[in-house]
Image (cartoon, rainbow, N blue to C red; front, side, top):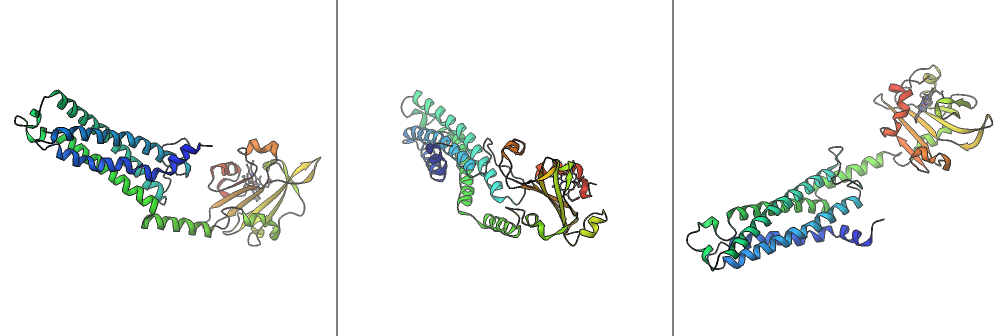
Length: 322
Ligand code: HEC
């Protein structure tokens, strides 16, 4: 896993960011004072110093932010931005804008540091206080008006990014609402962790009197169980009515007979809206077969998981595959 140092850098992201942010917050002040005819000279150097340290410091902040995002699974292990799959993912959306604002700030900051470096070099090449006196228009004095403007934009980007960062750490109405909604959805989804109804197949109506061989499902021995609300339709070869579901319990084959080792459970359900949902559950995948199941020792897939797509190949549009 990651080293303790990286972990520390990642976790302390909310602390690290204050160093560059603080420097960039005082930077416009130093730049403003650099327009002063007499104290300008020293402040050009100071501005360059503040800007350069702030900019370099921000590389640590950017890195730690990326590491942190990956550690808390908001960013995929090899990705640089979070994926926003739906409008409901408020946190991911805020994070995306947070990252964009900080990156734009970083680019603008680079430009600012360059302008400051140029002003400072020019200053060093101009003897005495000459540069700050007559002969220069006001906006050409000190660090120069363009650098000042860029400095304000830099601060603006990071200020905005920091505000979003604060929201992500401390929450606001939108993030709290999203968290509550996700919580409620999970509580309503009793089968989020386990296919509870499928596991309770013995409480359903058996559709066949004895185990049969099923070529379609790994050539295992199967038994099909259907809810009372759907058993008549099932026996008549019709699609199951809304709310009804069928479960297929399986056993592997042992010399032409069902073995005592349970195979996976298959489930097919007609939802209230008429769509068909599938679930595939295998609590203990035998070691020899794990390579076919993403090297997992236990799998639980259900619609709309893309791995359930193989079921659709035969059970198209939810109709009986027979
Ligand atoms: C190769 C084609 C094929 C694939 C792939 C397939 N099935 Fe089936 N399924 C069938 C057939 C044919 C039947 C009828 C019973 C049988 O032949 O075993 C069936 C029956 C079922 C049943 C019993 C209810 C019914 O409609 O008869 C369930 C539940 C089920 N399949 C679930 C699944 C799930 C979940 C998947 C994906 C993990 C899946 N099936 C993949 C062909 C397939």
